[in-house]
Image (cartoon, rainbow, N blue to C red; front, side, top):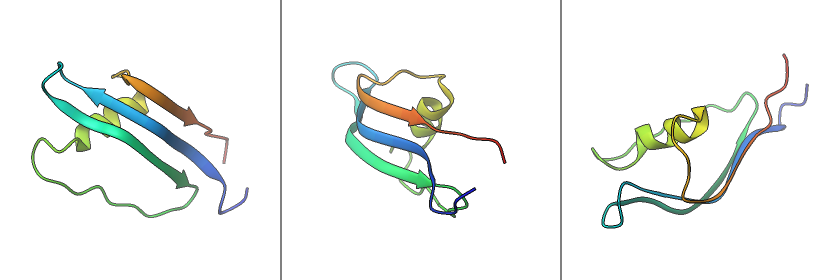
Amino acid sequence: MVKDEVILKFEKVSFEYGHSNPILDDVSFPLRREAKIIIMGQNGGGKSTVFGLITGVLKSKSGTILKIFSGG
């Protein structure tokens, strides 16, 4: 298991609740194994939406979400 191994990657992900309510627009970031992260933002800023996209509860409008979870 490599510490810098990418286990999740958002590539140009966009999501909206209806045409007039965009939440994420072209968001890209990697998440590395053993990384310590914090998601901060205003109410309605998309924090829960990011988790919904990661878990598959929500589907992105565009872009790719790569889940590269491996045992460990």
